[in-house]
Image 1 (cartoon, rainbow, N blue to C red):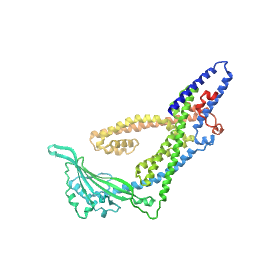
Image 2 (cartoon, rainbow, N blue to C red):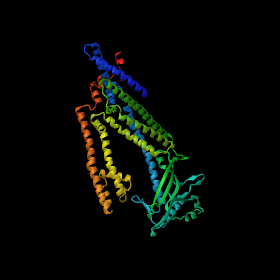
Image 3 (cartoon, one colour):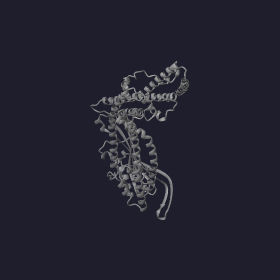
Image 4 (cartoon, rainbow, N blue to C red):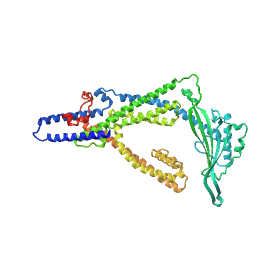
Length: 566
């Protein structure tokens, strides 16, 4: 394809050179006057036809309908997509919300079941400080696991594999050899880590054979790095039945960790779980049928078909725009001996179509995943929600394109497009200053302030300060630290807030305001802002004039003297 375009390009350029030579011949006095007048008339008609073709290309769907009577299929399809994609997202969002809520509720249940004295520690961590507390909590977890069926109010059960229950595992990690004497300031340590595990089966509760195993479980706290308790529980999410959805079965792989890596006298305790969702083996729901499932699958199929059709139409429009761009470039070089600027070339590439293509691709992928989730072949809820959520966001952003058909709304789109390059350059410069403050705050204030403890927290904290959030709390938290750190924190925070709020943000707003005023001035004076717009503006034919009721002919042919004159 590229070779064909190259050969076509050189062929046309040869023809253009012949045309230019013919024009120079025409300018000589007393030669072929009749032929010159006829040639100029045909050239003028070709230029007007091509100018009219360009104007038609940049018309909105309503104007194209008035010009040629073509129904705006893409416009109607986009409106349909907005409706069905939003309905699809709401349906999946409700299902995803039930799944996430069920997982979070079970995680909170596990914390209350297996952590001794747990009281919803939302503002602080769950920590232990004595050996007796550590042993008591480990034994507490084991005993609660063995008596789970008599304790829980939920539908929790032990996992079975190959005809026997999956055991609870208690694993400790520790340094291989250590000799530590803080009193004499001496230590001898082997940094290699060993791991020792014991397994406790829930069925041994009845013969008490498991009690001696974990009763003799001992820990060397000088060498101890962590104690991890692994257990697996099964349950069924029954709340989906009320929403006419088939319940899923869940495997919760739970890990309770006692973290002693810091060896600071404080052992942090946390509960984590990994969830596997799958279709239940044998199920029956009275009074229900597969009708709802078929309707949902059919609706998702309609969404895929609509998005695929939109994808094909928009891709075709983008390709036509790129072809017309090459034709305009050759035309301008042949008739005006000028090179079309890059900004004028990009006018032919409709960014809204690119946005729709991306949205359609994400919607098709997300809908396919949603079908897999509904049929219980897949459980990628997070991936599906990201795809469908992003696609819906892009679809609704695309509505701005249709508001741009109205003059008063179009100024916003023009301002955003014109200001975008300058905004990117400005943000790159501001980002250098911002990153400098981030690294400095992380290194200096991180050990003394929770909001500066990690690099990602620093970026979030500073961004909040730029927007005026939580300023006093950030200052107050460092009040009781060392004098040098306190003094540095004041200089650091005052300079950052003053620089970014009073200077950087003001310049950012001024940059966009200046672009807005420029666009507004051009709209009021109706001045074309590019060679392309100036060339098209010379066409005075209105969409209702009937001058557009002709078949489209390739403009490349009109550039050839052989096609036009012979």
